[in-house]
Amino acid sequence: MTKINVVVIDDDELTRLLLQRILEREFKYSIISFRNGLEGLKYLEENDADLVVLDLMLPGKNGFDILKALRREGRHKDTKIILVSAKSNSLDIERGFELTADEYVTKPFQQQELVVRVKKLMKAS
Amino acid sequence: MIGAPTLQSVVLLVITLTAIFLFLLGYTFWTRAKKKYWERYGQKFRAMFAPLIFEYIETAEKRRDADEVIKKVTRRSKDIELFIAIVDEMSEILHGSDLQKLNWLIKHPLFEGYYYEKLNSALRNDQLVGCVYYSKSGNFKQKAARRLIKLSISNDIKIAYGATKAIQNSTNNRIRIKSLIDFFKRPDTTTLMVGELLHLYHLNSEKIYTTSEHSLNRLLLDREILKERKGIVIEYIAHHNLYEYSTFLNHYLQKILYRPENKELIKSLIRTLGILKVEEAGQLIRNYSVYPDPGLRLCCVEALNELGGDENLLFVTEMLMDMEFDIRKQIIQTLVKNSENGHLLLENFMQTYLKFPTKVLSAGTPPKDLHIYIKKLRSIMNGIRITFANNEKRQKKLSA
Image 1 (cartoon, each protein chain N blue to C red):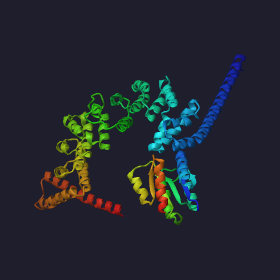
Image 2: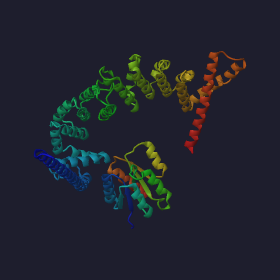
Image 3: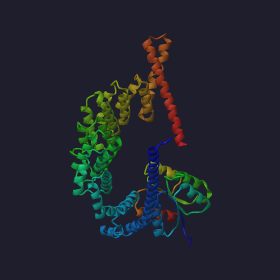
Image 4: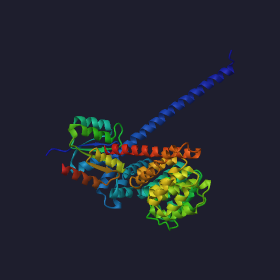
């Protein structure tokens, strides 16, 4: 079975560590993480990913811009994208889904909540 | 020629200055090295403890499980503060039962004892650190409570603010509202502080009924609290849609006298009654809409539109002939936004007055007063057309 590749882009060190732990522990995914939007996008332009977990407020390039850029590219047309953000504003959530994000998780969250959402999302693919 | 004593003085001065320079240079390097050392120490501490805490969250089942992690924290004050900082950051990310487990760590006796000492210290910075801990941890035990109450009336605004914030964790509403009132009475309180404290008061409590002596009514009825702060309380009620205050606010508006010093408070009340859709306030707001202050009339237009209903909207349409351009503009914008009744009322207005200017002008040169009236009428008609057109453009843009 091929290993699922996940890219985590979040500038907060603890959130990155937490996401990495959850995804490795629960799903045994292979994870690579970035703290900067530009670095993450550069990596994704050259590499495939099955799942991208993306923070909205990022230095360099914000999450919405990265999401738009990824969907423009053929390579990531079908990549599952989860937005993770402290912004619980309904307009931001709406905008995320308009830009074809697959899931939106607001911080703070419970670990189990993220597990269920990822499970559901990856099962659907 | 320089005499011997003068030369000696110069040499002494040069030596002194060199010594001071060397001391300052050494001190700068030493503080930099110290800072770098603690930064590296902090990074190492984080790298070690963050995974440990996450592991604890994944496995812990009972409060006592927190001891295992805390055992690894030495009693050094730096370690305690670094540990609490990590846990605090994590509590911004995690929720539910995960957050509960973080609370077991925060409320551990080791930290409670440490921060209690800080709270009791004579040093300002220590007191502040103690207040921050007690406001974030939600801990409110009796021994700390006494000290926090004392600090909440400190002359130092930052300490008083920190202590009042911490007191908002108490389950005793009497203590909480009392500290809030004391703080709001201070002359040096800022709007942001008032807003945050109100939020904590509201958030950290079970529903407090408006009939209770601990409700926000007390802040509004206290004569010593500045009117501008009462205005913030009223706006807060509107912003959070606290409908339970509707009746009280309506009575408050009925009782308040129209005086220059009460104007802003009256505006806040009218805005809030509109947002809360207190229909019973309609008549009173309509009465206020004919007062001379244009700002007050604008508030009334907005509130009456929020209240809706035929009577209020018809009244707003009649106000279209208001002398102030800004108010006429606001009324048109308000009615255009209200796509059902508002549009109908504006169309009726147009139909009623459309031919009036032409009729008057065709009968000859009108008197000066009537000429001004016609000019105003035309300006209103044009305003309505422009606002409708802009609204249509905006709608098209949105649907595109």
